[in-house]
Image: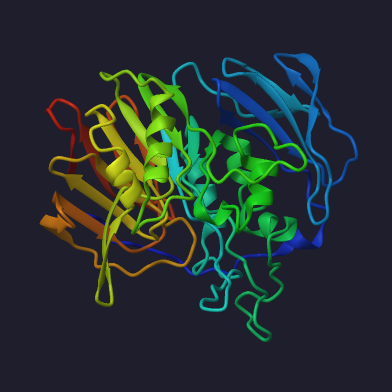
Length: 411
């Protein structure tokens, strides 16, 4: 595999958005049941705005009321075929007749915890603003996020200029800094579909996930946190994009109950055995990385639960591992990992390894690469192109469907 030289620039990230009245974040996301969800966070208003849908004024509904540390959010569900969405004359993105160009990013927040402090104020150390701007400039038809948005768990250490002024905790301030403010360029450019990461699990940033980004209805008061939300399918130009919530499944062990839950959730989708599928899941089924003396091979629950359950023409796309990785499996589903879009990276060797043992399984090749970036895929050609945060192409793979087992050809 030949990849181009990784190039990055050094620039300081402006935090000026914290110093003035930020406009209400508003976006359009793809959700279950083949619908679009128009959403607005009420930072500066008390009532939901009206939305013009195909030039017809339509009232939004309150999705979730204002709460301690969280502003209210409004929602309107519309058909995926909607051609015009406007709020106060500002146009929001819609889907084209044929969705072909798809951007993929994942693991985007700036990590601040007791073990690791990322320089959130430095666009070289945390490049989400320029990375998002470069994705928007690519004019994708839809953007897919494979999960993990909020990483600012603890306060910035006193005297650390790299993250000075950063909010922290599971609240709107941290959500805004880690995702909503830097995502403004994406909100203006394309419809987005969100996956739930383990950082949005019930023991972490669940409140922000269910309130703002979940593809399902906001849970009623008193309802217990859903450890796993139902999967659903996005049909995009002859390809099923299976949106699967794997935030709760452990990587190195599993249980009969967890396996049954995974199998039943996929069975309920009634996937055509001859269909072509991209399986979006936060935790990758397969990984290959050695940290100190321990190898990491992926998510055991998915490996067992999904074995021979899905059509042969199924490719897994995930994040969770903070690097770019391509795994061409011999007899299992192939895997792409794009978990390198902002969060502090895990160091890997930028090399191609062939005939790799992954536990009791075998990969024809594994390519791993450090460095921040994102991916752009095309449904028509089944091509995945990879870019660094500055928008420079660093390689590509073609997913072949004309063999008994799909395979990846990369250069």
